[in-house]
Length: 374
Ligand SMILES: Cc1ncc(COP(=O)(O)O)c(C=O)c1O
Picture 1 (cartoon, protein in one colour):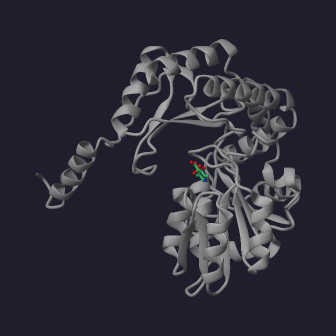
Picture 2 (cartoon, rainbow, N blue to C red):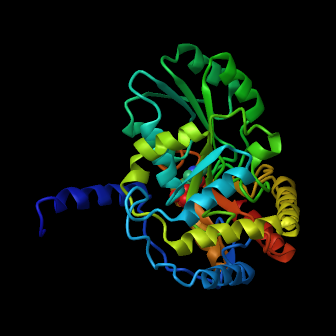
Picture 3 (cartoon, rainbow, N blue to C red):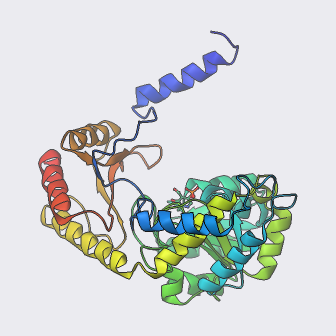
């Protein structure tokens, strides 16, 4: 071995191989039917969006290829600040701050907001980016049972300092929806602040679930990511002007990172333009979701989901990988989700539905899955 640290690296990798959860990067395979990407509305594939972005870039011929620095140094574009105001207004929040990714947004928000002595209570299935952010803070972190209000209240009763409760409106691995309105009542009772990650809700539910419920003024903050239904990349934290100012001063993933390029900002702006015209794509997506629900329930292989994410539990890493390989042989791209990404025993196939999947593709998926699982 070349370096003294190599032994540790290879031992850890061998442990992964033995546990059946060794990760490798796979080359893209565009021949397969896409039931795995987060491109729920087809924006990432959209030639209309590509053209809108090209036109927007052409309108700003002097734009730079890169932003040249962080937002607090040379990288702050007036275009970025206008876009933040526009997006905040679109979602009926006072202000917004762009981050280079959803991971960066959650890392910056949760590492800077709660302080030593404060408490952050998250759903047990909360995304890794939120867990990592809280870990970087000095706050206490507790989890409550998934979507369970009794469990949440137990944690709220014992919480100290300023309390934050964090949920996803649509859960990334299970596809189910948090009971946000009741959670909000509970958080009010304990003077806690509710923060909602809308990564898998934006686009799938129009402006998102917080907008559907009209709770913008009630929650403390909301995280929207652009890499899923919006088909681009980046994220924004929405909330008050005060929160925005705080994050500009204390969110380290914002402060110490090169700002997004003009191209990325233009892509986000144009994705919002497309979203406003995407009603028929949203309807197609929901018709497809209903169709898959029907198959999963009729074949008794999965449960209904209202979102674009469906999961079929198979119970082990080996089984999940095996079925995913067999699906690939049938021309279908569905990725296995293995432990430790999900809890042991809940290893699964995660099916992502899209507006562009055809009814024949969904039928093929359901029949193939049914044969493989039984
Ligand atoms: C709920 C949730 N939040 C945040 C993120 C991170 O967003 P991004 O992919 O833009 O870094 C993800 C991505 O998987 C997610 O599922």
